[in-house]
Length: 276
Length: 336
Image (cartoon, rainbow over all chains, first blue to last red; front, side, top):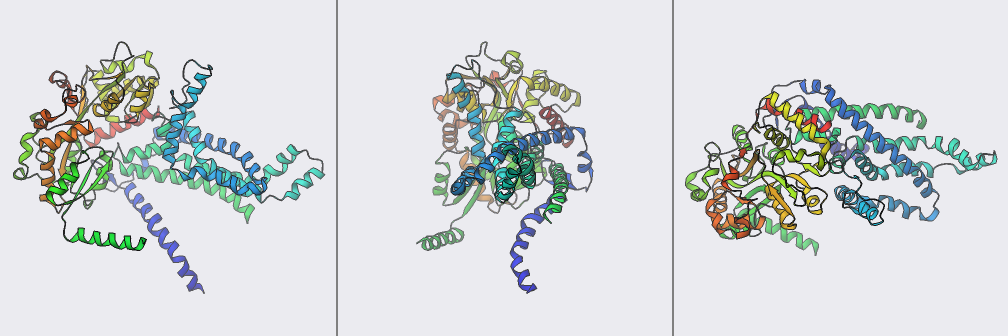
């Protein structure tokens, strides 16, 4: 029996080892080496790349990334909660609505981000419409700022927030709401004191699913931020491109991963208590 | 049905492997005419696997391993010395490259051309909207407060520092930390005026009128000017950088002879002229120049006059220490 189980697990293990752990191992090795003249890595072995992580310059970039990812997470939760609630109470149309939430995944993220550039730019759709309606004389600077980056992140990761919240709300015992009403709670009171606390695990799951990719985002800040506000993902990318410093780029990404894993560990520990 | 197609393609693959010689070419995007590769294949009875990249780093990352499978790649001139030092290149055999005699002597540099054949080149200047009066003439014009929000610089540390250094009257290859810090201060002073740091993607925004002046490469700028005649391009008064893309043969290549034949083919004046004409880029092949269409040949953006070229400065390879300082200064600029 045990042997059969091991046999069925084999593909998953092979996949993980080969495609996840092996590249990770390469990154760890790179992070301990010295950069080659024009990319690549070489001797001597060193911890210097990790020491450099504590440079205040990179701390500033990490803090900025946290702020942007935090804003995106907040925006996603605020938008996703009512949407998930609506879908969970839509009866037979649920499947349709859920599919619509996932519809954007049918096209490439890059293409969708470019579409946002066409919406936001000076001669773009939004500015042209406002201009046409006579509401503005000068185009609003919508593109190439932190606001544009946060909007792009919210747009990109909103489905990741809707789905866990939906599954949480879906499983919510309707009897509890009836009980709250019977005990004299107005609908908004029931929402505040019953629904919200019970969806906390869904909120946390949604928050994690949005926050982590936002923290490492590099495409959105690059395209919608116009390269003016650097996030940690751009810093890592730069090490592998223009700076040609693979060891430091590797150390940076491992450092970021360590931060993310600490956060996850702290969160999962709480959820673990509730779920177990 | 599908299975039969699959089997047929397998047979095709098998034939290709056993009989027809192959050549693997890795080049920048939009850097050959549509018929350049098919004509070579027909004449030399060879199958060319042609792939494209968008940056030197992308290409380097692939060929560093030494078993990338490519035969010929096209690094920019300042990438050639480090590639040579890493032992990635072979010295070219002049006997197999008789067409090298067609090259513009201005691009034939000892040390470079022993390992690399100049192919196409471009330089950096300012693409601007002619509504802008007075029209820009110098890098300093990209620091004009009146243009706030209407200017872009390239998203490239070497280029941004080059403009700032030349604006200060310094060499764009400066290795002096004080000079580089002074250039960084200029860039930091400029940043609030900038709309963004953008590379080729700025083209459409200058055409649309969102951007009034942009630091840009001559060939990309020319594509914008072709699309919108209300645009102009200028090589700044203070001096500007030149980039020369070269063909090199990798040491790992088991097809050295065919690789030489390909480069020699690209050096034919009529082939080179067709590439330059169709891609609107500037060839380093002097004999190709008279064969170009008049619109390309007499174009001051693609082929600046000798008087303008006197202000040009070639990018040089940086030492690792200077490179690291420059990268740090750039990270500080971008995160400010």
